Length: 113
Image (cartoon, rainbow, N blue to C red; front, side, top):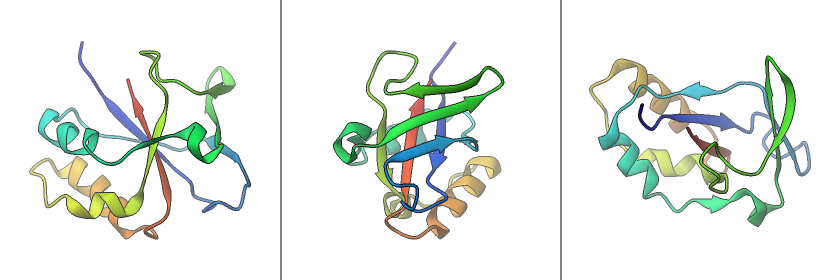
């Protein structure tokens, strides 16, 4: 068992006021070198922006303030991912290319599990 990272993107770009419903996510393949870089981004707790995150899964909608380890959920802006160069894993590189293409101030929630 190890650490994984899933990201949720604010596809409405702040137009949903303070509610953020995580119905779509992207999961990185496990790469601790990449995770180390991402974990050093200037992440902020979602409570700093008064974001109420709701995760939608097969069990319904759940309000989440913490990750499965009990740590506060955090977010970064999409511009942070522009610091990462190509990574050798094609799946992770595709996710990074997508994140880099988003408007710079797009909220990206980091869901460590």
